[in-house]
Image (cartoon, rainbow, N blue to C red; front, side):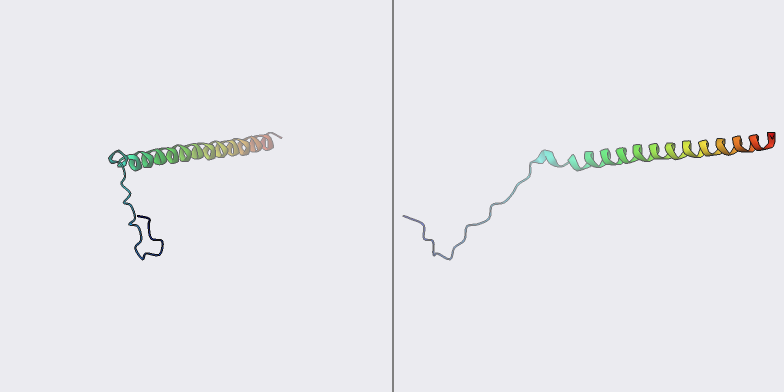
Length: 69
């Protein structure tokens, strides 16, 4: 028997089932993202601190030179 192309019946959509082992992957990805963001933030803080220290030393050097003249 050939299928009737003019029939009003539509095929039922299939259910998508996810594997049971996928449940904890979001937690691992979240921990990884938080760790990377923490490392980037700490690196940025160190860069800003080093720049501030360099500026302070430059100001002190300029004051010392101007007082010595």
